[in-house]
Length: 191
Image (tube, rainbow, N blue to C red; front, top):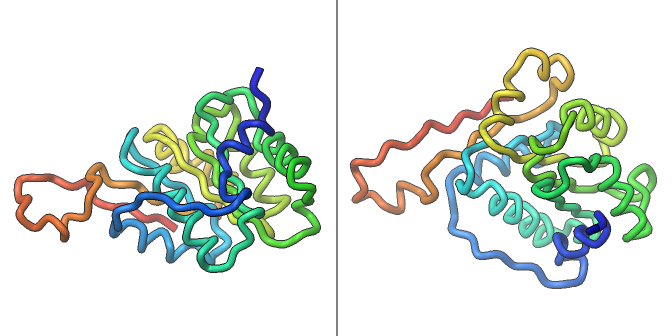
């Protein structure tokens, strides 16, 4: 059985050194960057293969380039860990890196495909309540995550999320002005 600590090592190559991604500039990223300094949880939603994970990796790359301690950036995907707990991922990180979220520095926690995790809403609320001032949280997930985030039940529990729906179109239309018959889903940003 694969352990969370082993997967954390594989998913976080920036802990060991250089990290670079292939990324084509998208207008949506400028919207996301506006919310980075704010305490709100950022939620990226959209259909499969629209680039949510790539945007998360771009956030990581930019954070490192701007001086954020790369060893304080934690990315985890729940694709194959549906029974895991967010706090278990954080504990695995603390043990691996010999760190303590309560004592040392600021952290960036990126949780991909969070909708696959059972009871993720309550887990996320608990983490935000405990570490919200020290940990910037970014989550991503499918359209079902969008439905949950906009439900009254979830809004009663976490009032501080920023929801960004990733459009279906993977490229910037301003770079492709000759494409005239495409319909782009409107970007919705909610505070």
